[in-house]
Image (cartoon, rainbow, N blue to C red):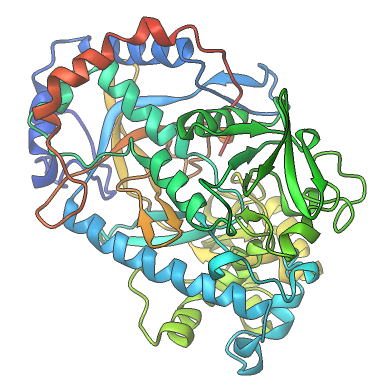
Length: 514
């Protein structure tokens, strides 16, 4: 394959220097790509697409004219992160999640950070995800955010920045595991001699986390995954994680409250439930406390939770900490609770509810990226430099009408990674979502979900808007836990690739659009 025609186009490219030379972290990978015969990489990509289809790894985009269920878009060229880089990410994310957990406990408890005027009271109590029903709650072990997905971007300076936090029901980790599996099946030779940290043990780590935060119980705590059902866009992930952990996948109708505990209906009678890894939104959990019209939750669930007889992961109310306006205050939150400076910096952010900052945003709207504070999936974003005069005018009115609902940030030149386009490689913008588990300790999955904007020039990486994903390789270094040599397990990898026929009988599910 010819690599000399590849263009970085002035962006920070994670595989090539500006002069076209491969970066030190990927010289082996670049050499391997250059040694491919014409058309071989395209054939590998087609094989990966077929494997994804046969494995039923799909996602949903509601309202799309071509239908809702689509094969998960995956690019076979991996994204490589050096071990020392991820060591800093690991340390920074552990710091961040520890501080955010303390923040959530505080705002629903004594609210010291509000009384000390570090974070404005108006900002917290006007947040749509602040739930007054959660004031006074004390989750088992003091842990509110058991599972977090934090989005990172690499800027033109080569450094990683935090773009946003996802502390409610973050999705996508199933694709991290399946991306690695697909790579092993379709291109095992790519791993030769590479020392890559594993991701396959995430379900085991997740189960350990959930069991650790269970209320006192006789024997091994019973964990279940609570799903809205087969028509939910993330149902593939719910099913996958339940199967990988070896626990039951349940809907609200499968659970009942009796004697102050949660029970699961089974063919052998009722079985007590100790931990619910819930994948439904807060306000659908219990119709007696939140939305009375909810048919997804369990009536009386919150009372059992408040009495400490069941654990909900994540705890309801955690969304107050991933409000994009609250995000702007995370540096102060870390300093307040930990007396430390932030390790992973935020992207500079203007909060439009502050008069001075709103005036600046309105004046410089054509230069900024504007985001609604509680939307997800890349919806509602205005990229000022690419917006029409009409779009800018409309957005100014939206900001003036509801300034609390918007933040603005400078346009970040997201790093690019080589991606297959037809029969050659082109640079496409990427972000990274590592996953953090908080139980007895804090664990950061080495790697995470690399999302790639498959459309040329696009900065929107969400799969619901034309994005895809890559396998993320974190190179092992001495002192990094869990490192192993993939090459030494080549025989095992090839054996796994031969098991494809056994997996083709799996049912196809619908998965999250992330």
